[in-house]
Length: 420
RNA sequence: GGAGACGUGGCUGAGUGGUCGAAGGCGCUGCUUUCGAAAAGCAGUAUGCUCGAAAGGGUAUCGAGGGUUCAAAUCCCUCCGUCUCCGCCA
Image 1 (cartoon, rainbow, N blue to C red):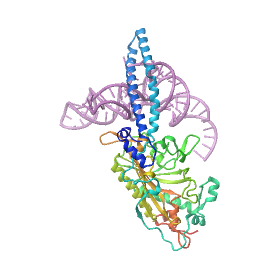
Image 2 (image 1 turned 135 degrees about the horizontal axis):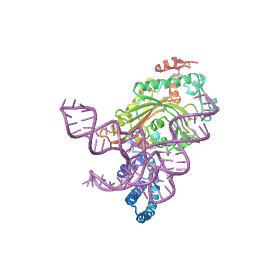
Image 3 (image 1 turned 135 degrees about the vertical axis):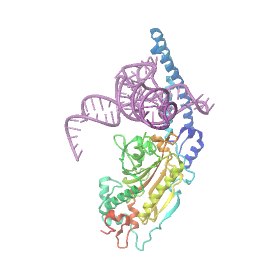
Image 4 (image 1 turned 30 degrees about the vertical axis):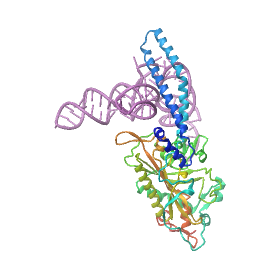
């Protein structure tokens, strides 16, 4: 959500934002509703003031006749503006609905484009792994070592179901523990948050009402979140927080995604599954663009550092306007090299929002002048399993069929090579 | 799942239809006093919307939403949450 005053003063910026993000949004319609809203507020406030003026006379009036006269007058006054009061209620509802649809303004450095094919590579690390033997996919390797059971996974969970076994499960636990330790050393506070959440938290983080189709919903009107970001931001809803020093959290949760728009995409393997696990970086900071940018770069750097420590070749792309969410100002994706596909695939996604989320969630802090302000929020993947297993296993396959374990993971896995 | 109690400002705690955004206390801020501090005294101390250049004005908000009424913290309904007891389960 943006500040209505800002929207009113800069309608052309919102228009550009919608265009750049390839989102349909009619600013003029919002402004018309806002004009009516303010008109009605002025009118109703004035009538209410009149009413309050008379109302205050009632208790001091002991004369029954006079008293009844005042009440009669007030009855007429009330009947007079009941209509406007009812309309105001409706207009405010309409206004709030539209306000939730206003896109945040993307940064000028965000490249133009309509989808992920227009994302721009900004740097690479490492070189795509070279093999002097036929490369196997993670599916073949993992099935060979009984690290995964897709057949029984779909038996119990349906389409995209999978069960991690043996080294597949061990590697996963190792990655979680390693990543948690990594970020705790960076000063992040660990959180283990729920995924089964109420609607408000999704509206607050910007996932609803836009992406209703992507979420699983329960019969109790709760939703399953696709990222720990939702609970980690929602936990501060309506709070006054301290961001003298940016608050940094490393947050773990199961994640659920319906993948409604991706039927037929990545149907095999661990690339795109309905249920997975993720450690997420969540940061709340003061309302300063410079601070947001600096922290955005920092959290991206940390993720890169983690990838480097795992010895995984990757590149970083700046997401184009059309690939940004409603609330995102700017986003970098980290994509790891996947040998079997001979291309980079997304493993991390780092974005900042300015006060888009905190305004919806009402998360504020006091600045040095003592004024209440909406904080800024950012988030980035720390590690997402099982997806990260794909580049991890494929890039580390050996000619003898075994899988090399990256050095940093060895103490967590308990071996330097997986061979049976 | 059953029975009951409760939800008021930063905290505590009054208020059961009318001059109540809300007494008192605590805390906090400023001033007075003091060499300084404490204590004391005085003053101030919520947030949103809206009008205004500002000063300031208006209005809304007592868990949330709806209703009754000229008027709701107070009455009615729904929901959410907390606590106590019982039951059930890990």
